[in-house]
Image: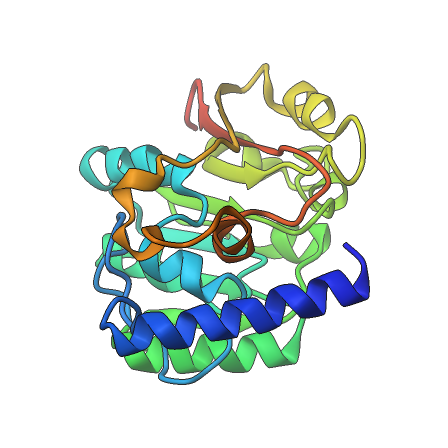
Length: 246
């Protein structure tokens, strides 16, 4: 996306957000999805903040998260690429007995994550760390029931490798894949795990706009500015469960 196009989109977003705030349609608390009730620090920027609050951001994963909340009991969750803490905090809220480790390379994002922990009262169970490498994961001794939740924009090639991190063969993994940024990553990750895991695929998809009253009355270019992804193409997620846990 060109710089000027991006700036115009930012200006439009701020204008629409202000209008919705005046109408009481946009605040600081997530209103839909499995993380409903999560609080964002007032007035603080976060990537895709509007989408996360109204429940459009990565809505394709909502059925998975809702299913896991019912069927799984994780004692440890490792969130690699935690950003401002949306998934780290949300997963801590869903799995109230789990210890959560959030890896995030950027200091600004780590500070936002700390604020998110405080706003949602889960700081006693969530640890924030810096950049995560394969060697960092290999040195970790995971709990028996562990979930790895990963989104590191093509870094999955280097980090999500059971040849370097053998314990990955025995844990649940949800990874965002980035073939739109680097061709062949889905096939690479599938090849690494297809003998040890049952692999379920989720794909970025469109929205049913009728479900979101915040978008009613907006023009199509305004809707696009508010909720559509900026990436060059579609991307997938894999949710992978071990065939045999050891």
